[in-house]
Length: 363
Image (cartoon, rainbow, N blue to C red; front, top):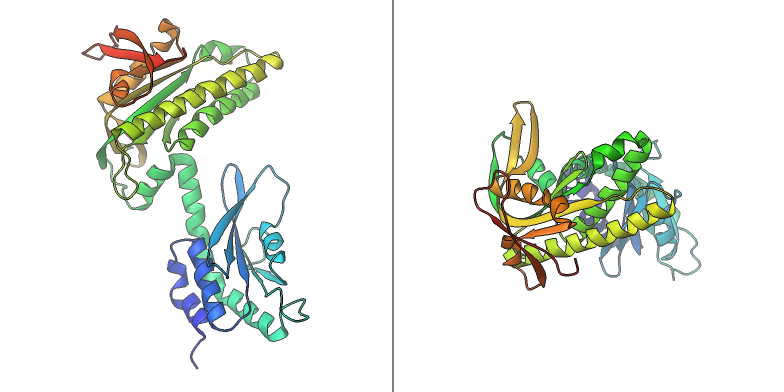
């Protein structure tokens, strides 16, 4: 006896789904085609992530669209899938495993079904059968999502994608063009000597939130946290969503302006609590970098190296002597229509040619 289409798909193909959203949409489509009266579906996975506790994908039969809802670790536990499904019709759901962290699969019936408050017994039996067959592919999907979440948390999205694609050999990499951002706290060593360790960690986290939040908001990626320092890139991209030199530089400029605004706000909050401010410096440069794997044979690091990285680091070191929180190289200034304030040419330690230096127009 041949299996129904949905069950055959779960056995043969579902584990290879590109992601949970495609899994849920395809399974829902097949259930509809088999006559099950589903108006929507929800799939919840727990993920190992610093701030996200659970991810829920919501599918609507009427449109075929899937949206994602996030549950954050600091928020009270809630069931976003059940709440959303209840707005569509009677709800059926099942935990795929014994633990509260196992996948949760749910379906909504048709709201206008005459007199129905729940799925009919034969419909519920079929959904239970689907859930049993879904256990294996969902385990594979959950493992992939967990691996991706961990890699992205520690490497960043682009670097994680490279590692997952198999770019693991030491010395492998590619030359890319990118705007680079290097940021650092001023007088961090002195501050750390007079600040209780847990308070220092909290201060660093607040600072990194401002920097990384702005970088990610404008399409960049943090490559490194080194002590109190940050190295981030805004790559020039190719393909359907290509970003040219100017777009990368202007994205970096918008990010560094947002970082400065965020740090001003943070210092005001700290001042209200009787805490010392966190003066910082940030520099922007644009150029070619080698982005790839370096390190020991059994301990690799996915990072960026090259003269452009050296220059942006040296330029950031000029922030304190010049009394500026943001410095911008001539290479970035040439690739933006933004109004910048020139600060002349300056020699940078270890860099052969003097660097034309600018800052944001407002200071």
